[in-house]
Length: 338
Image (cartoon, rainbow, N blue to C red):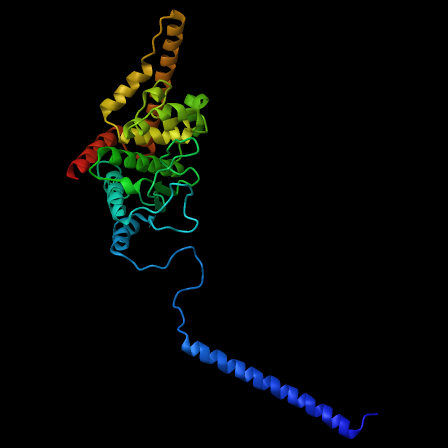
């Protein structure tokens, strides 16, 4: 049995340990509060949402008033983590070119559809992409073929490339930009107002490649923007408008609309003539085969043209040929003004 003195000594030790712990805790709390008082807290959120916190600029205000508020499109031109694309040419655009590109998109794209004689003021409401990415460089894929859109995105998102080299007074630059805009707007509209894909597919389905690899070689011969993205004789002789039409039924459909709205009626007529004009050879049998190929190409070319014309008239309540004339005239006037 422990003595009374031993018992009291052990109780004393326990009491001292408790007091020492309390004193240590008090000192630690005092030091912590003193440090917080001297150090200025950051007013920046520690939550990483992938965006830099930056001040609103005059450009941001212009975008808000001219693109976002009236059309419901969020414009992304600064670098964002997990932004809509990846690749060696995917980098932010020059700030000084952003507004020039967006002005063209607005005036030659969005406002054209809203004209009274076209779709009317409410035509695009609820039917536009909700996000628009701008990039400084181009969009070549693994086969060296440059696309007018990012195939990894949905039709609810748009990408515009080559902002750094854009010049509103350069007809070729405006042409390529509007080819891309009309292609992507068409895909968004046919997503929301569906077309009979199965019926359309039966016309040229045997030609669709699903990849740019088969068209990379003929694409490689193109030098100018018109040669790369315009109506193309190689494509015409196979029943298509452009080289990018070969990729899928959706691309084919969108390319017919986009190429129509950026080409003159004479250019479109010449493309149809190219489709029905056979190549020639000294061998009669080869000539006969060429004649059959040209006949089939012209059949597919005109059938798809009529299909798209009818769809646009029935679903959009727009005459595509009338819209074509308005579109190319507005493009020419815009370039001349700049």
